[in-house]
Amino acid sequence: MVAVSAQPKILIPVYEGVDLLDVCGPSEMFFWAGLQVDLVALQPGPVRSGCGIVLDVPNGLPVPAPYDALWVPGASSATLTPMVRGPDRTYLDFLVGQAAQSRWICSVCTGALLLAAAGLLDGYTATTHWSTIPDLLASFPLVKVADGHPRFTKDRDRLTGGGISSGLDEALRLIELLRGTAAAQEAQQTAQYYPDPPVTSAIPNVIRPTLG
Image (cartoon, rainbow, N blue to C red):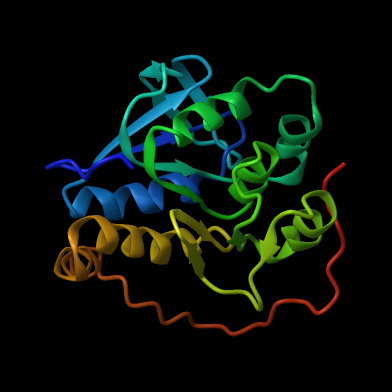
């Protein structure tokens, strides 16, 4: 197992169409906790997120090296289908190599589909965005889906988050695992993360697969 470094390092491999909040929300929490965040992509340079905001990613996919956590963000089904189903496994193969060098292997939202497609959730309990649970169940029978819709699920060295905003809660849990409860509390206070949404709604009872 990779040892925790003095300044824990988080590696986030992004891609065209990535969900912005999956990347930026957790990165903000990690920043306030004093963690180092490294963004990488298939090619260095601009990477357009699903909502159109462009990330300036300085580095391409590196040779796998020790990190305290690998953080895999999600995207829409249209973005993920070719990554999960297509013949080009460059991104998935990178995840396999980097996971072997990482103390924690994490996903948020539909990033769980990428971990699953890489075989990194086989035999683990995981969660994902509610709309993606049918895809996870149908396509990856070796993955056990957590009951209900938890904000995040920890199973040994796998930490998986629910939909999009769940990455904030998951990030605080990872900070707690790497730096302790006090560090996570301080990041929560600095970010003033005390959710109190002005509306209420419920996850639909009928959910259909979305991957092509």
